[in-house]
Length: 565
Image (cartoon, rainbow, N blue to C red; front, side):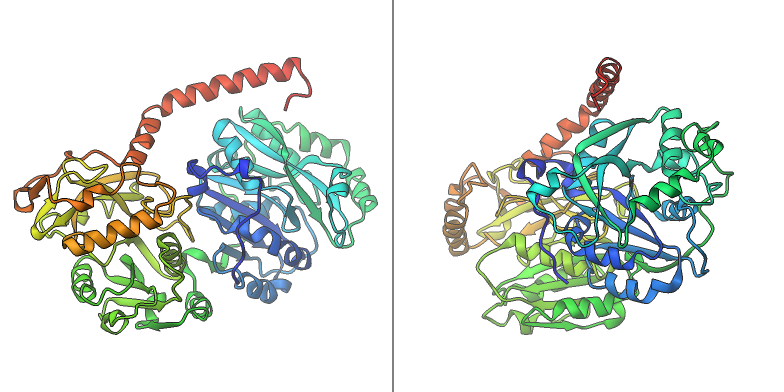
């Protein structure tokens, strides 16, 4: 099922902010007989859930809804689902041990705990993630209002809702692990969330309320009187345990291990082939050369798009096959023999889409969609007119380093012949460019940018590495190709993504000999956009100090201004 992107206030979404490229959030849901409510809110929430670096962990604490829930999740193949099931039937109980199972399976830096029946009124994931970035030693609370299951919301009745800071908590996973998760001595309904917040406070992680982040709670047959009765059943000792725990650390060393059966996992998706076949039905044509490849773990897969590349496609495939063990090819409805000539044993999947004009961003995001169905340690974007220089192809310098997530290559533009390259390419150092192309998968991703041209071809930018791998670009080697490229860029680049212009394409000045390139290590300056990121990285300590000062100021304000969150 394809879903539209979230509709949020424009002021909340900043595509220059690293968060949108990798939220790094595990959403944990304790799920007990909530299928009806979850099915109702999911179509609304799905666009928020399927963004870069978000995984959704559903801990199903009862087997009755297993089949229908599993089928429902498969309707949303681009949400990174992880479904864990307790196959033992039981009466309703406290969520603490269930949430802990989810925590133990989380892979991201931050945890967002929400209920399955919660519907987003605002983009709370973005809002909370942005807040915790600015105030790292805090846990973030969004607002929630209880509404009848069937109630239609309007601008007027939303204003009348009674929002409270309850039920939606985001905190760094490390802090929850340090406290051994939720207190599993809670047996009956309620109190585990109060207790967790109190223990976070005790450990030095302070509360931060976001009044602008709003959700609604849609529980079928919800009875506020029944909820009040359950609350009033708690004894004084229960209330003391909930709100004033004696210790910050709960449980013993063994926690979150009551059950452990995973029946759906985005990292090892047993349904990938069927989901991919369903997704492929929207295209003009496709060929899956190796159906078994959906279950195979690949080392490196290259992603490429082609349009009328019959002269280059065979050489490209041969070159790429020397360095990658899988190729995914998207044909943009070529009118020549590109599709027929795209034959190689390394091709896992080739797809033909309907062309709607030149749209580099759309094509790369389709390739990212396709890549989500395959398991690989690395993915890499390469263009059909690019070839690796065999002198500089040491992938082993980084590919086994788990700390490296995104890798840049060096690139030169061949000019007039295969031995010469252009020395005055914009944003280059004497003709040598730094371009980011290779990345580890973090689940389904898209490239998020306002640019139509000349954007960075990786979906996120964390833990980057500048390699000395070099590729040659053949797309500007011939004068006629350069003239066509110039005319296309002038027509397409209405946003002026290349501020320096394209006049360099019309001359053959400042040429260098490729053979003289002996050692390119540390000779190339980063792309302007990456330079900015490096400057930010160099000042991360300063930024953290500023955040600490902000936190202290905020705490002082809380003392003197009780309404201050």
